[in-house]
Amino acid sequence: MDVREIETSPGLVFDTSVGGPEDGPLVLMLHGFGVSRHFWSAQVPALAAAGFRAVAPNQRGYAKGARPDTTDLDAYRVDRLVGDALDIAAASNPGGRPFHLVGHDWGGSLAWAIADRYPDRLASLTILSRPHPTAFAEALALPDGEQRRRSGHHTAFLDPDAGPRLLSNDCEWLRTRLGKSGVPADKLAAHLSVLGNPEAMEAALAWYRARGERQPMKPTQVPTLYLWGDADDTVGRAAAEGTSRFIAAPYRLEILPGVGHYAADQVPDKVNALLLEHLARHPV
Image 1 (cartoon, helix red, strand yellow):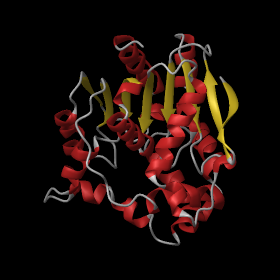
Image 2 (cartoon, one colour; image 1 turned 90 degrees about the vertical axis):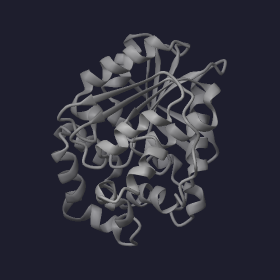
Image 3 (tube, one colour; image 1 turned 180 degrees about the vertical axis):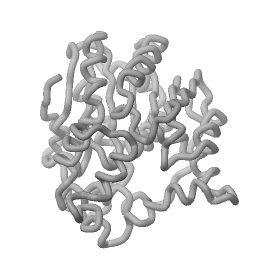
Image 4 (cartoon, one colour; image 1 turned 90 degrees about the horizontal axis):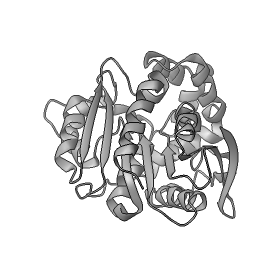
């Protein structure tokens, strides 16, 4: 695994974990909140060994070279984040062939959006934790309030003092949450090396502050693998199992017993096996 800088335009340079032959089928992997490109550190070499071109960037705001002013929320709108992913794919994908897309948490939200808007660009979709947006919206509206409680931190992240609170006491909130979810100490340290400073944290929170209303989304038309741990503290069973109703393509839900929100950190070998099997079923 190497680290390379990918410049998509002036002022946007993404530090990126890469592996595998440059002409191999592209697998683009998008991380979520609280982690970084290091989330995929076990997947990049496994994919490379299988002949894929694996690319896992620190995304907008997480990458020092791609960090617009965090008070300019227009710079962190979903369309900009989706555009970054497509630009990184274009820079990493000679010939513009369809590519495999993998997303976790916020990266999963972007992956669902890309599959919705540009299904012809994708060979397959793999999602960790984040349910289909329509299933998520339905779960949020259930009268039992379970999913709304699980997602309460989304609202808390909108507070102006959220950044300092998350960084206080040596990033106690993130250390506690990731630790309880089974993230190993070395991976936690790697993520905090990216996110554990005021500039990066404010940029990561800008994703939430810039999101706005969730847009309606069609049933997904890309072959999809969805990995959900039944100990995920942010996504309940209703949203996870409800996702199947919004996939209009080959679909597999894999429930990971005892696994939390950060499956690639917690059970990397299991994620690798499922991911490689899915990609083999849907070759470019």
